[in-house]
Amino acid sequence: MKSSDIFSYIPTRPGEANILSINVSKAIPTDERKLLNFVGQIVDVLEDRSNGVFDGFEIVRSSITVPSGPANEDACFDAAPSLPGATLAFISPKESAQGWRGLRVAWTGELTLWDKAEDVAKDAIDRQLTKRRPSALALQFMNDSSACVTMANDPGNSFASLCEMLFEREKELAMVVFSGPIEAKPLPLPIPFRHDLILSENCKFATFVSGRPKHHDWKGYKLFA
Image 1: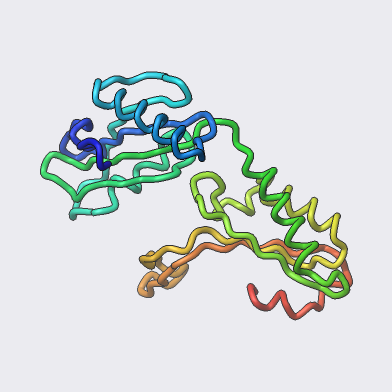
Image 2: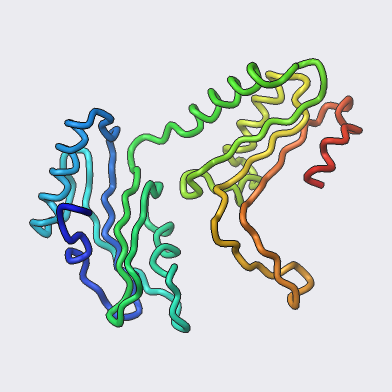
């Protein structure tokens, strides 16, 4: 962002979210020298107005029609999840008369999220739970585009598979709670059957409970009843 006017590389069209995606398919370097070199390669490609696949990343330009109506400062960001890959970073200037522009960095390489989630869960159980009485485990998924908490209860979902494994491993685990990212700006949502009322939502939760009979009367369930 400091070395070049990134948004000048993104053409705009009225009524559309014009997004330039940098799709990364190999591990981003943590060594500072290698990281600067990697960023330099990306900037060179952008300055050449190039598209296509390069060493470890791909440049894709997308135009997505956004709903008409009052100006929406989040229109470009809201359109981004429809694009391939898991969003790692997103930045957009304010709306212009010509349309919206956004710069997106996304991960399109091998998804190791669930292997890591399993490791984190097992470590949390071993470190934090007594294993002598019913207990709950909470896991937060910060990137909603990689693992959408709102779909956690869908049949065959990876959240359910993870819970089944954890419940089988730890006999005293009574409940697993999944949380999405905490939004700084509450989201106004209509309350079912009472469309005259609005619920302010800052975070999404999904819960799974153990089917073991000995946990049926555990009062901890009431936290998310």
